[in-house]
Length: 115
Image (cartoon, rainbow, N blue to C red):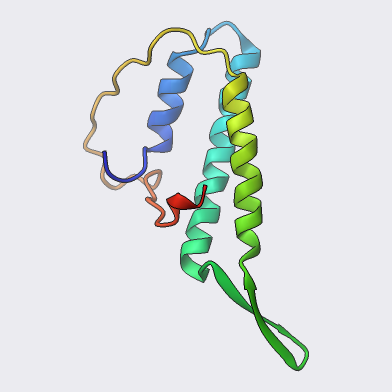
């Protein structure tokens, strides 16, 4: 499989694997999806601005690591902990393929190897 999984497909699959009457688990899946979207936005920013950024401070100019990298690492750790706390039931159902190439959920960041 190449590229990133669509967020909507991920959410459908995760919701299909939790008890639909357990509001806590549904809430965890919704939080997971929200964090996943934030991670993808950070990845886009890192792709755009680069891993290293130039900071200008008065007459000084220096290069430092992109602060988005730290945020990406924090969110990734949170995402993993949240995923481990979700009580999944059974195996995931295969997703139905849709010809939705214009969807904005599939942003395919280039810096996916950062986490």
